[in-house]
Length: 404
Image (tube, rainbow, N blue to C red):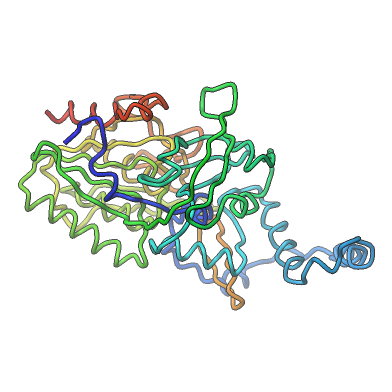
């Protein structure tokens, strides 16, 4: 095996094409949280505002706007709802139209897509690349985590632009091309990158072996069609590692945007022998619940190195942070994204949905994972654009070095 390349990238095509931009925003951590919407609504005591102005503006737009006939009632309705949700200024709290909801659900299930294979999010109001997925056209073309998107096919993208509009601009059929102008982290000038869209599927977990004695698990996300399916895939993968007799493991969480919170807890439990705190849930009133290991892991005796980067977020940070805190794993790479909130997903009768932040996730020491408090590697190793171009992977090389 070429130690300057990650194992068989053709088998690890982790893609959440542009449709999964929604995943990058919400990261779906906490998707399994059961929030009783009706009960929550009964507890609301705040007075509803007078909406006369809203309807006055509605009527003016209906009667005066030059192209009023081009805007449907659904466009106006969903636009108004999005404006309400956006007023809370939380990029992880989003309202999705029926079409966006369908794309979101399909991307979580790992279905077939056509696109570039990248996840988007916000950084200080700008639309940025959270993660280009392994084996994707975006990754192969040189798109990197935290690239700021400056334009799409020559159309400028600025601060505050709607991420879903950017999604629509980038999406397209396999074989067609799109040109992104991006600003790589640390650069002072933008770079134009032409990408040929491709056919993409999304395996959540793959396993390979390095020099026959180091297991290498690439975990691209903590979601599948269901939590149970994800657990089954995880169990099959860990069984393969156990059956191999390998006592060393590299767990690659780079460019993993997260997923089911319960999946992160389940995976962490695999490496913990006792009853240890994995994460702490804190609600808006400051009430806390601890999530601890309990099943007795099958990988408690394995020597572990975890790889992270700026695209590792949410559930990835929960898993890496817990195992780092308890001294189970050495962390190699670059600082994580910093996204420690959970969203409840409310589905509505018309097919639309609301993803609303309901909890913070804390590390075992009680600190909140956020943009100012990310997971910091024990061994900081940069993976530069030059490394990518030259087919090198110094982060993986360091992990192998630590396990030799």
